[in-house]
Amino acid sequence: MITIRHERTADFDAREALLDCAFGEARTMKTSERLREGRLPTNGLSFVATDEGQVIGTARLWDIAAGPGRSALLLGPLAVDPGWQKLGVGKALMKRALQAARRRGHRAVLLVGDAPYYGRFGFTAAKTGELWMPGAYERHRLLGLELMPGALDGARGLIGATGQTQPKPELRVLIARHTGRLSHAA
Image 1 (cartoon, rainbow, N blue to C red):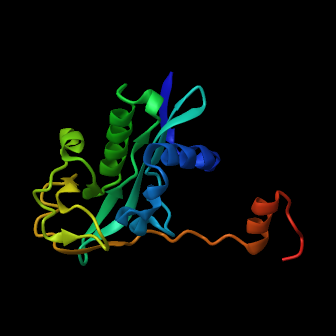
Image 2 (cartoon, rainbow, N blue to C red; image 1 turned 60 degrees about the vertical axis):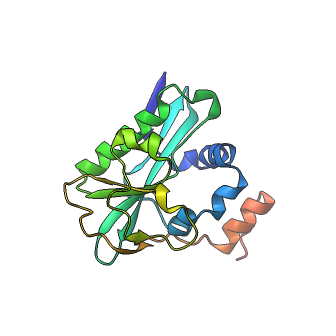
Image 3 (spheres, rainbow, N blue to C red; image 1 turned 45 degrees about the vertical axis):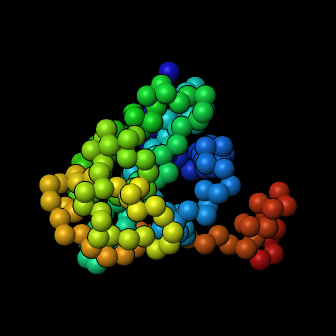
């Protein structure tokens, strides 16, 4: 049975493997990744789909500014294990993420993606034409969804990361991950 739940720390390796499978090594080169890099996802807005404990899908939202002084969220990546695609897993993850964002009072969500897929959730390029990303991207793929009417009216400017920064691991923890043992000498 498929379950959608909040992401847990223990999901990290499975989520990363899923993203590598879904998007390949090039995923870390995308402009959207620059907005996520070194940041934590928005508190309470990271979800996984599981089946019998196996992570089969992921969706995360990130705090951004949609131009000066205009808070929004960035969706991504949304990914589903190839063996589970076309079964409604992505749709369920998307609905859960958007409902949670709306309940938490967020006003708008942006993403870079395919309009035919994301359009069914209400995403459109109608109000993103005056926004731009910090790097290369296909302008027609920059889509927005207003969770509150008018949230993207007049949105203009550079999209920037505003979320909480990720704590940097201690050197001894990095060494332990690399060697498989924890050294007491820092």
